[in-house]
Structures are given as C-alpha cells and as structure tokens.
Image (tube, rainbow, N blue to C red; front, top):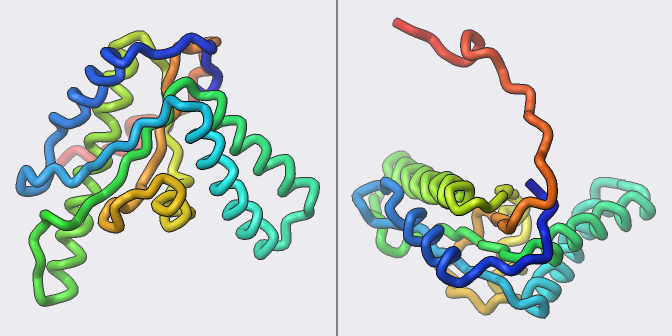
Length: 187
C-alpha cells in the first residue's frame, strides 16, 4: 500500500501499533528494535531530500541516465512525503551479547536483525488491524549514515527499514505468490 488518504492517523492509533510491534519475539528478549515516528511534514521532507541525494549519487555511479535518476528520486521523495506516518525501524546492537569469535558474533547480529524483522511484521499486522494500510521499504539500508545525521539518531541506531502507514486510498492489487509446493518441504 503506497497510496494514502490525506487523513491523519491519531496518536493513539500510532501508539497501539508500536505497542503491538514491541511485543514481537526477540533474541534473548533484548528487544533490539528502535522506532522513529515521523508525522511532521518538515521532518519527512528533510529526510526525503537527503535520502534522494544518496539515491541519486548511487544511480549516477550505476550509470543510470539523468532523466531516469530524476524520475526515480522524485518518486522516492513523494512516497516519503505523501505518507501520513513514516516509521523508521532501527537495529540497536548495544544490548546484545558480544562474542570474541566472528562466527558467533555474526550469529548474534543475525538474531538481532531477525528480531527487528519480527517487530516490523507485527507493526504491519497491527496497522492492518487498525484499518490502516502500509508498506515496508528497505531503502534505509542504503542510506543509514545519512538518516542518522538528518534525524540526529544515536550512533547505535542502525536504520533497517521504513514503513509508510496511513488510511488506504485504494485497494492494492493482489500479488502473485509462489505456490506452497514450491516453498515448503514436508518431511
């Protein structure tokens, strides 16, 4: 869902969504997720512009034509600025375990990332239960430092994803999904 009515989402509804997301399962129950909620148009515009600059830089390095860069960055900015609520989900490793060997430390990080993803899924389900639509985008993975700077985030808050949330303006088309037989193995 990427098209929303201009109708604002009440703070109480946002609180309910975040409360539900925060009950997601997490590795060691450390709850390594952090949320940044943007409803103010000026914050959304600053974030959109900074992320668009990063995106344009990456596209230029990829050799994308200038007119395509302009179209893609314009669409990216519009998605951020047109959503009534933008929720950034971050990973914070500061309370996770530390291991001296790379293998276990990488496993710890993977568990933390999985925990954040579980919270993100619960966030979307909670939004749906509140009558909202939403979409999860992963663009923050490509612009983490920029996002941290623009929003003055703690250095330990690593942007992982962003949710655009609001009252749906239309019903999205049903996505074609793989057949269960292609993704399940019963033993």
